[in-house]
Image (cartoon, rainbow, N blue to C red; front, side, top):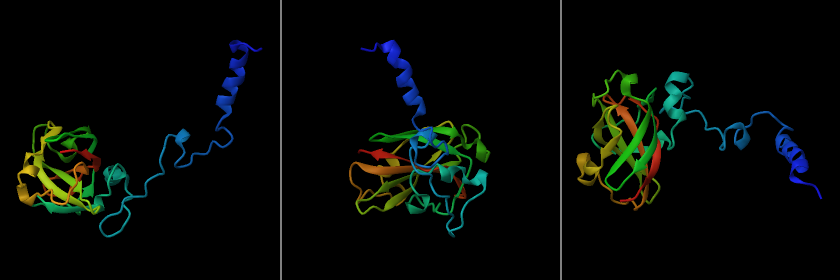
Length: 191
């Protein structure tokens, strides 16, 4: 009967050899750092691929397709906002508020830490699969949480009609002119 010390080299060599027969990186293979297939290049409203590295940063991190978001509420139409350097992550949805983290804050747009010159935009998925939403508040780099009071009180026409509870939710930040945007992050909202 073999003891653990004599089996250990044989077991280690099996683990080390696993996957070595083909070291070429392939999308969708977990051992090369990606557990999911690579996302296709983001497309602009006119269908062109957004290939330049600086502008594509946000689109590459979109957890919900930006083109699927219908700007129905809030009085702002940001459908043509271009991806930019501002990056957000970690959407957490509470009943009455949301919070997130900045990977790269609004200073990329020239806004100081407390300058609430950007738009907080929420989107919810209706029972039919469509995404509706829009601006619900102003935001700055110093604010990584927002109350959802405006959504509940119908700000800018906001309505949750046809939205199941819980529902998929998406959050994006758009500059004050609706020309630039962060990436889109997603979560689940139970109200």
